[in-house]
Amino acid sequence: MAKRKRGPKEKITSLKGMHDILPQDQIYWDKIKESVKKMADNFGYQRIDPPILEKAVLFERTVGDGTDIVEKEMYTFYTKGKERVVLRPEFTASIARSYLEQGLSRWPKPVKLYSIGSVFRHENPQAGRYREHHQIDFEVFGRKDPLLDAQVILLADIILQKLGIKNYHLAVNSIGCPKCRKAYLRTLTNYLKQYRTKLCSDCKRRLVKNPLRVLDCKQEKCQPYIEGAPQIINSLCENCHDHFKAMLEYLDELELQYVIDPSLVRGLDYYNRTVFEFVPDSDSGDKILSASLAGGGRYDGLVRQLGGKKTPAVGFGMGIERLVEELKRKHPLRKKAKKNLIFLIQLGEMGKKKSLRLLKEFQRLGMPITESFGKGSIKSQLKIANKVEAKVALIIGQKEALDNTVIIRDMEVGFQETVAEEKVMEKLKKMLKQK
Image 1 (cartoon, rainbow, N blue to C red):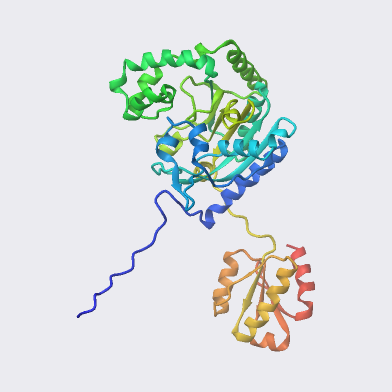
Image 2 (image 1 turned 30 degrees about the vertical axis):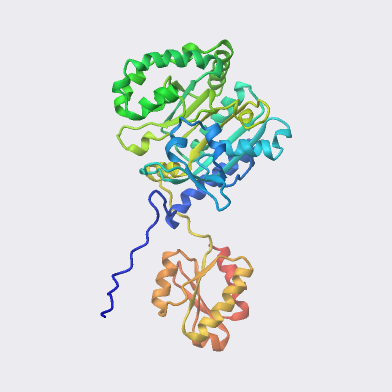
């Protein structure tokens, strides 16, 4: 019987919607994370890292069963122990759960927390939007003062400014509280029913389950009806009206320009009162520019939904991939060469062994040094040394290994000299001090 011929092995690629963060992009990620950490420290936030896996009921109860996240986008599965779990689709519910479970609710108020990490949503991948993406998240628990709303908005604005991102505007709205929203939803539903047959399929479903979500629709066919919808700020109760008015006055005091966007509701059910987004200004139809740079709002009922006491809270999130795309497009960064980088060049087996011992010593002393072990010719190694912008090259061949010497080459001027091995460090320090 003839043996079956095996075809070429299938090429293994990443999963749809997942992506590699490549070395050339790390400079953007580092800049964003460093800026966030600095601002978090300046504003008195402490870091928290909730687990990636959570019980599915956490998000079903808080985010809302009529939202796209719960209906279509969560990665939900059963463990071997038959427990229904989910890859976290967002941070706020996880942090609120931790705030309650870990006793953070007993800390002095306000409790300020931030986190950076992966979130997962099974949505259609687009430029800058992935099924695994990374978010920056800031949350404040324990104070209902509208000043806190203005403060978190200020923090988001400062982070964007520090990153060099400037072409955006702040959109704000109030979606009221359960008390005043109930009457508004009746008004909104009656209005939308007139156009039910003209809405997209998702909005037809939302009209039944949660009419407020219709205002969050991005489908072009629904926009004329959203624009003509009654505005919720005209239905606010006295307390919500006063809260929103005071928040806007604080923004004025901070000289933060804003536009009131009546259709801004955010996509999650736990929000109440203040909602906001930082929206990029664009003169193109690029899809990536339709995504906000940051967004958040107030969620005073979330902790209570999880079994705790009624706890006022406000926060916001930023997508790191979204920020990276914005920086790459408008503010490209160039990786800085390591200061006083030393390049180690070796020739022959004896030179390689001697170089390895020297490399260990330099790393022990914390001096920046790199090499290209495996490259044979001195020409190819010098070419790499130039490419990585090394200031000095140390050359060790067979002769130098036998003589216990090292050739020190100044990469900027091309001058080189042979130095006894025990005097290499002293000579290097003098050379690098002049760089």
